[in-house]
Length: 492
Image 1 (cartoon, rainbow, N blue to C red):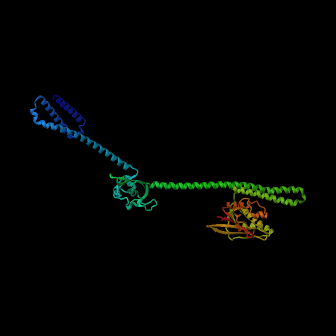
Image 2 (image 1 turned 45 degrees about the vertical axis):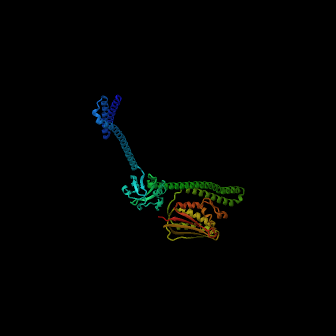
Image 3 (image 1 turned 30 degrees about the horizontal axis):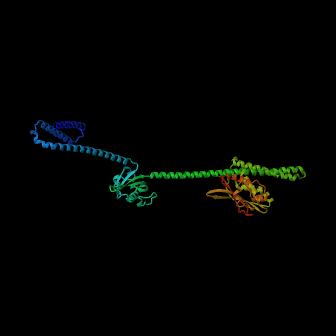
């Protein structure tokens, strides 16, 4: 019996210490029902211990009416206490879980609101059930308005980038609902209620319920209108840059080809000059020796020496003219010049030569021809070159004509002077080359007429410096001759 009493006393003492510690450590969070159960358990345990103590001392009659109740009450109170403690722990865990869920929900909401992409959720019917802040900007609607929208609302008008209708079966939501599989980077345009048109890139994935059935769709929507505009501009700039590179490459290739042409021209020029100089010099040296060996033929040899000397002088002067024209070292004395008067002067000077060759030299001059702004001496040099060629290449019995005329081309007035003959003409395949330096056509080579091949090149350069141009017209048929026309802007 003493052992029972000691056990009860120890249990009572442990219960008191535990209660003290529990109340002290958790007095602010201990549930009220738990405190009452703990108090009742203490009282019942005290009754039980006191009963055992009185029974040991033999004083039991006073507690007999309560003994049965106390024996039932103590286990019941212990059970209730354990239940209360467990319930409190469960409630605390539930409160902690609820707080964590609130934090997680808040975090998800913050992520949704801060997301740079629009997030839209649809139910199985295609009705919008959720849209974040960015989705408002992408879709052009407030969330309250977008919640009333269906995915295929006609007001949105889904189209391709070029504006043609976008097939409904290709819409991301429809594809996900039909296949149950995510879709990535589906691009199409929509029209906002304001009429603005935006290009979207959409990624979508299915949402499943507890039974594994599709319950809805979540879509990540990105507005790529500006990005596509920049891409198009970059593509355009890249195309322009490639075009510039191709153009520059072509220019460089053309420049290289021009350098090669100039190099060949230089080599040809040196070769031609050497040949043209060598011919009269060789002739002069030969006739000089012959003159010493055969003095009786002095007159004939002297005539040849004078002719070759003049030819050499003409060649040197032509070379000097070409060089000065290339370097633009010739200063033109530009003054109003009467082309009719210049034509008459040149014709009068060449009449004796024409008569000697049995040719008819005539003029057909336009009345009231306006003056041209020109260097008279240089213009006369050009007329002399053209007229000399015409007289040299026209056979006996032919004619040479000098004509002037006023012509209007593209709203601009031009004074023209032409020299035509009835000689052998110039073949069409030679005409593109007649203004090249040292070029001599078949007529020059076959007739043996002296010449350097520089006259027409000099004439063209002089007319170009007068802001004019010179043309050649010939059928290449012998007897129809050739016509050279000088075009000059009128003075003033």
